[in-house]
Image (tube, rainbow, N blue to C red; front, top):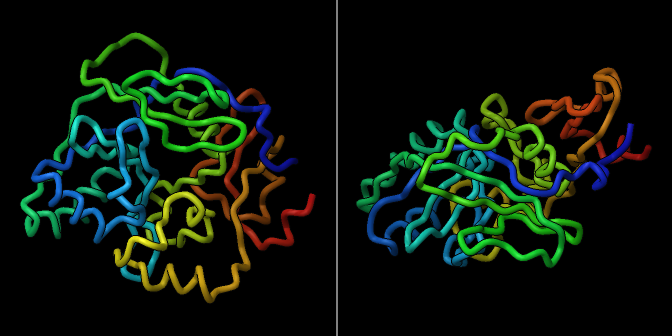
Length: 253
């Protein structure tokens, strides 16, 4: 059993059939205002070629769903796991009418790229996550192609290896951003109020985090029984990959 190892990264393109695209239709400034009051990231900083990992929380700061935001030709697109898209639509539809904004599914082919540092990206590629070792990016194509093999598991493992631990539908409302290390990548503490912001900010400035989430690579499911597994454990190339939540002193091997 070992903590995350970047040697397991799979570079190149990954066809992502498990992800859905949602368009926020309406006046651009109204869309930004709607998002700023709801999601955890600072949508005003979205730019072409630079996407944004984000989350939607409830009033108590618990994560309801994770997603990525893209600025695509003066329109904001939400990239989200298909099993969670109804959560996002239902939650945003409570407030969208006040801003004259509609949340609509978009038919699109999504490709994820894992690239080495300083590797050039394509013109319609959006960097989502970047570390010293690699970057993760998304490419949105409105023309659906049947070519290529879906690589959902490899993409999910890559995101975990880069420190991005995403919830699944079964995890809805169970964890706050700090427990999953999402405060480091998916939360803005400077943009102002959003749903759950008061409690999340209190944890940032006053709380002492007793638990953390790490990716553990292991040979048997029995090796991680002392942890709470976030999302799903993925089996790939005779190894198991689990995002594990536990007390900090458990991550000492």
